[in-house]
Length: 441
Image (cartoon, rainbow, N blue to C red; front, side, top):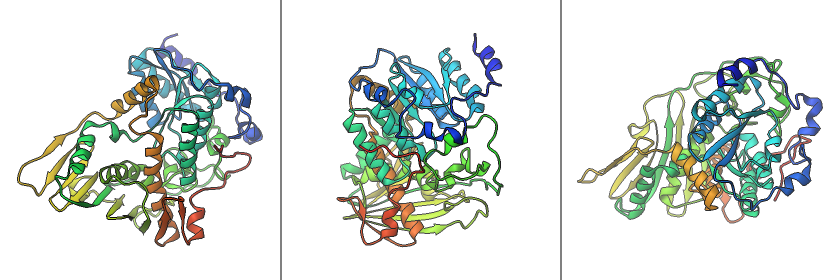
């Protein structure tokens, strides 16, 4: 059957392995999988992949579809399976892979079937944020290597467990911070660290662009072919609402982390990379929903300041403007007493020096996937290892916490706790909806 025949035949298919709330106990994260807990444990963690790395993707609407096509374009990778709770995404996702590779990936609606499949070497996780951690933990336990989109977690405690799981099971876990694979980002950071900007005590990161309002919508029934119970997973039980579903989930605390987690994770990662810092000691945030009068919960305007010994990082986002900082819409800047360097996905340039020093852009997405695959084969640590992803994601979580409690937060990097503020400390984690649990390491 060719691709067009497949799509014509399958577009009306609406069968799910588990499809409603009455199956909740059977799909509980951290509980017995489809083939049983023993089968997951039995996955050989030290098994080397074949010459062709076999990959499956979980979550295929936007970024997951792009990542699947990118992996399928690599000569030593086979994208063997795709998985999503929305059956309606199947034709476009299958076509994206088949058009590149000439192979038809199989389709699953329950991600645990991929974890039970011993022939799959790695999984890509491109679901809403609230699913990143439990899926990554279960995948590591099942002996799979993992590519997980940013932010890698929904909260700080989840990220800590993800790092521990990767180390315990000796898994390659790449976070989706593709700037780490961009040669011009690497040379920009090298320039900052070379001392040619002088003493650098301040870095800024930002995104400024116009987003469309999402309006207001009433709760209703989930569309045909959507396993909403599985989509919710560990998140609180709420009626289906189209405004909390595809993509717009980013703007609701139960599932997403707002623009700070969406774009901020990328550019804050570059800022702390250049400064050579990890977790801050104090975080303050001001902002709000000033522009949009709709269903969104997360701020459309936000400024966050991260304090380190001898250095500061400042984040800003405006989702209703087109006049970016330093003339760039999404970037990071390093301010030294001998010059300023500004870098974005299009290149970098140094200002306030007598000579012109700049770099054009470099390839990032495919280079990042290439690094992931190479590390699966060599068992080396990838350029955006899960610990890197966790720390940069934690910056986003801490900024959101400071915003949500409305006051400066004192954070102890040694104990990974908020000091003197119980409300803020509680937001370092979240309660999972029964019967789901977060697997612990």
